[in-house]
Image (cartoon, rainbow, N blue to C red):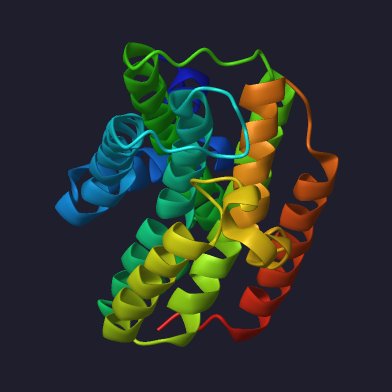
Length: 264
């Protein structure tokens, strides 16, 4: 072996320290976040079990009690889009807030901040993990709805925009809560806000079911998400006004989170 060949081999075997490509880092972070979310019993309860129980219980009880809404269509057609919106809210807001709050408490986020993964990659990884979990939620809830007789319209664009902007709005608000409160306070606040919005935020039921308060609920992120989802699956249309409301909440929440979020 000549000296030139030895030099070439030596160069090929030389270490190349540094982080993996950005896309690979984001995918690895997203995969880890999604697995942790689905393994957590409380988050799995919020993400899948509670929405499915609300869908089955709401449709069954409503039909048994002959519940009448202003919309004459079958209850399952009205409930299913609202429950899908509720699932998006539970994952993007409550689950993300609680997980991030305890990650701050145990120093996980601080350690990730010292890794080659930049802050933008961490946020992208969390968002991708949320979208993966939401895809599972939509498939499961949609399947249960189909078994109950759901006949959705093909409002794909409206549904995709509602999920994307709803995720952005509630994720920003969830990080706002998790980044400013202690872990225990985040747990209590996230669950309380979730229950209040589920009961009175016009997410499961249309705003017409809330009387005069429906005019207020329309401007809440929960009401806007619920109405946008119902427009997509009931009428096959895009609710631009409700999507605009979600966009405002996303921008407002992101701005406040960027100013107040504490890494530890």
